[in-house]
Length: 140
Image: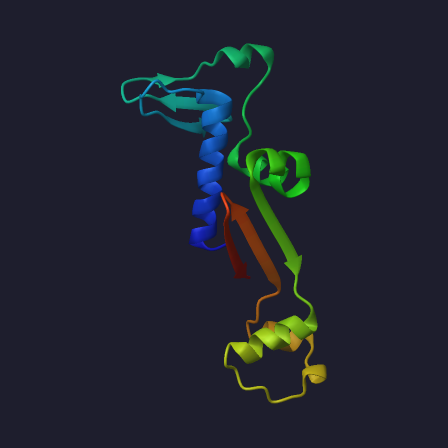
């Protein structure tokens, strides 16, 4: 994932945290994060480790859990307006990428194998992230 994609995911996660944990901040700047799987809020003066909803067994998703839910749960993804789509590139797509990159094509498209393209550092996956009507696509 490239830096721009990670920033988009981070923005979505912070929006999620603000909605699920912090709610209305009454004009105060607050920072939320996780420490040893416990939510920590810092309001500029104190660290707060408590949240009334914790007593009911609720805790917000960690960033990793949030991303996994986005990838695997369409309802959750739709609710938070974030989509992460990953797919493997076909042999012909990888060969086309090699040609578009400006690499010399020494063989016919049919003669390439995934191993040859791996050796040439041609990406194997396409990742598309969409949030707030902004879409970023990258190859890995």
